[in-house]
Every structure is written in C-alpha cells, then in structure tokens.
Image (cartoon, rainbow, N blue to C red; front, side):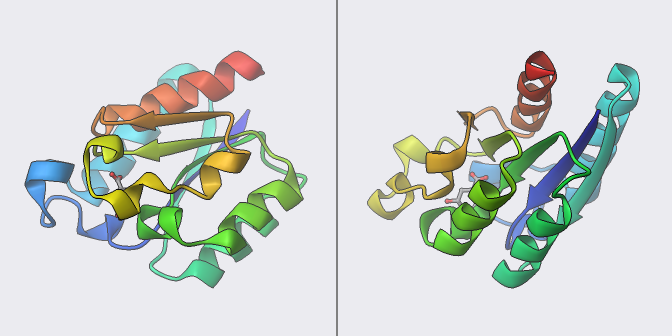
Length: 142
Ligand code: DQA
C-alpha cells in the first residue's frame, strides 16, 4: 500500500510557529514519526510539503494511478482552495483531512473546509498523532 502525506503552507515551520496550537515537534520530527509508523505497518509512504497551492495540486495529480491513499493537511488552503478540492476529486484517491490543532474551537474563518467535501474523514486536535490515525483509517479501507 502506498500513501502520500501532503502538508501545505507554513507546516514546514512546525516547532517554531504558534506552539500553543501546533506543539513543539518540528516538520522533520513529523516526517520521521510518519516514516517510522509506516515502516512498522508495512506501508510505503511519501511525505511532501509545499507553501504553494499549484505544487500541491501537481503532487495530487501525479498520485493518480500509483497511490492508494492521501493524508492531507492543506494548512490555510483548507479554508480557501477549491483547486485542491478539485484535484482530490479528479484523482478519486481515498483522502483523509488532518489538522494538528482543534480548528473547530478556533476563528470563524477556520470553520470552512473545502477539502472536507472530498475527504472520507477529518481528524482534528490530536496534534501530530492525527497523521497516524489518518494512516490507520486509510489502511482499514484497504
Ligand atoms: C492547520 C489549521 C489551519 O487553520 C492553519 O491555517 C494551518 C494548520 C492545523 O493543522 O491545525 O496552517 O491546518
């Protein structure tokens, strides 16, 4: 099974940005944690982060035909990007939405999620463990 883990803008700043929302783990810590979990579970994974909407769309399109599941934290693009939603719909790959923080307890503008319309599940507020639960969810489907 092959899973693509996508992270959007500012998630490369984990560990530095707003630790009260996102904790102290860095993006490198997150990647190591995901890779080690996937190794344990026998899952092939690729982690990709970009601050650019079009790069995330390209990566989703490139997954077509060679990837069994997508875990995506689109960062702020969650609340704005129809293009990322359309890309996930276009490739029809089972996708789980993850947010490190508990977005439902935050500002009004964070209550809109476009990607949710195409996600089989949304996981929020579990910190970086949310990515592991999303991988579990995709493995259940397989
Ligand atoms: C986030 C929540 C978003 O509202 C925010 O813009 C992010 C991170 C999260 O993981 O909690 O960049 O997706």
